[in-house]
Image 1: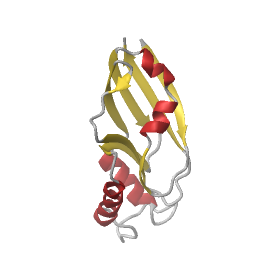
Image 2: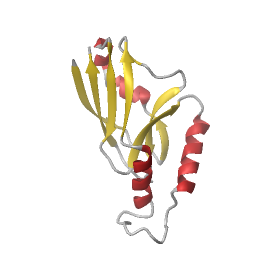
Image 3: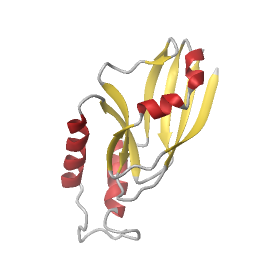
Amino acid sequence: MWLQKEIRLQPRPRGFHLVTDEVLRALPELREFKIGLMNVFIQHTSASLTLNENADPTVRQDFESWFNRAVREDEPYYRHQDEGADDMPAHIKSSLLGASVNIPVSGGRLMLGTWQGIYLCEHRNHGGSRNIVVTVQGE
């Protein structure tokens, strides 16, 4: 059995945001899967996805702080700055984290660890809404 849906995530400010519940609300059909694998893919080059801590919001703040130090804006060697100072750094951060995550499915539920959640990593100051494609394969 296959399921594929495009989901438009609401706009969020720059930072790391838990979107697990928003994704699950859009996938009531997930309950039909006894076993499988879910891929979540973001259709953008200036935002990314990752799995991490779902309880303490300071983890998400620390992620943002670390990435901003690791990939600084306004570096003199950036040539691609068409959309502002956060443009090229957003692309680099997106490549570092990646465009997709894979999560096992069992008994109609995601097999996330107790403290895991899906993050939308918004690397732009004004990124707008983001599109993801969720594909579930299983039985």
